[in-house]
Image 1 (cartoon, rainbow, N blue to C red):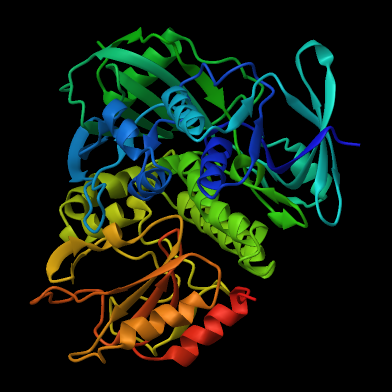
Image 2: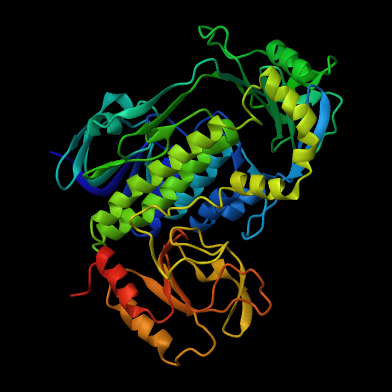
Amino acid sequence: MSDFCRDVVVVGAGPTGLALAIALRQYGLDVVVLEKEPSTKREVRASVIWQRALEVLRDLGCADRFLDQGLSLRQAEVYVQGRRVGGHETQVTGTAFPQPLAIEQIAIERLLVERLKELEAEVRWDAEAVALRLGVDGAEVDVRGPGDRLQTIGCRWVVGCEGAHSLVRKTMDVPFEGERRVDLQAVQINAKPDWKFPTAPDTTYFFLEHRVCLIASPRPGGGYRFFSFLDDPDPQRVAPPDVDEMRDLVARATHDPATALMPTVPPWYNRARFHDRVAGSLRKGPAMLAGDSAHMWAPIGGRGLNTGLRGAHNLGWKLAAVHHGWATDSLLDTYSHEQRGIAQEVIRQMRRNVMELPPSVLTLAAMRFLGPAVLSSDRIHRRGRAVLSELPRHHRASELSTDGAGRGGRGALCAGDRLPDVTITHGGRERRLHDLLSYDRWTLLEIPDRRPAPDAAEELRRAVGRFPVPAEVFRVQPPQGGGKAPLRRGSLLLVRPDGHIGLRARAGDHQALDAYLDRWFVRKS
């Protein structure tokens, strides 16, 4: 029998597990995080947070402290076989976080733990989950603590965020589908370089050479993260690279034989190989998976950390809604479908990422001759920045996305899209649209066409008020002269707590709204 019962046990105190615990605590759930290590990681590891993940951190109440301790990345410079072929900016519009952030995992975990302490959540260090038993309505977790003391914790839900060898995933008995990436390794070092290139704390460098892609990304505290994808002629070589190996690699990729490297403190040397895998399901009864327990791939594009944070953001509000009895159990199943779809999309995109994969002779020739034209194209720049930011990633294929307003024009929002943070008019003044959103509730946006009925907003409030799920209603207008504004007059948008559109319907279509709410939520008794 268990010693006591918690609402949720999160196994693993990496960024995903900590972020999920924050999301659940914001909804009032009793959460304990179990971590077999004695403290947060002493390794710097992941180093870039993209714009969509910064929005996630805002919803978790800690974006400002990340911005205070990170570096905003403004641009990238691209060199092919020692010759500059162009550059591009990383800034995007439609968000309060126009630039990605350089910040390392050692700081990320510390800041998330600080936020958890504010929420009075419990993180148990030196506590390893060694066995798990799943039931119909809950689970039991056997935990080995200091001095090999064993304890059993009962819980309503358990979430595995403990990495590739997840106990929770193995207990769920779901396959980890995928394969090992062959002939690909990554080597890394944090160092201050003495080289021929300008030192710019907002500029990332890409250097492409035959079978080598070297990325030099500025890091807080000075210096660069030198991160190289290259071929793997000796897979048995597992020791981290030393300074001499990395210096020779940097000199080769940059065509600067005089390069010297001085390792930073704390040091970071790493050699890694990769698998591309996604769990066959991310939910089985009371057990769920998130982060590397759910999906993993070669860290091309720096997507692992960011996708894990987005998954925690997706799962947190859904688990809370089902736990509180606001929503039907099927709402929780949509997490698995949506997050698996995102992971599979990331894997497909990163396998085609010619900017970071070790280039062949033909790829190098194409980049050398076509790179200047490609990198000077505004259209390609916009598309590239959007992909990097992750703002366009959507859930259009999800059961939770219902489009009842017919097909919009080009660029129109669809159900499943992330709501852009554009300027709107509300209450007679201009505001940012995301100022009306909140992670602790749904948001119903009425965008009337010309003259709305005076009592229309009150009718909408009554409609959503029949359900216990928290929600607020706002009547907004695109700004005058908005041109190609994504918000279309005469529409109704029901926005999920994570900022994605659940329902798009015509203004005044209360039948579509009632049908959507009845499908996913439990009416008040």
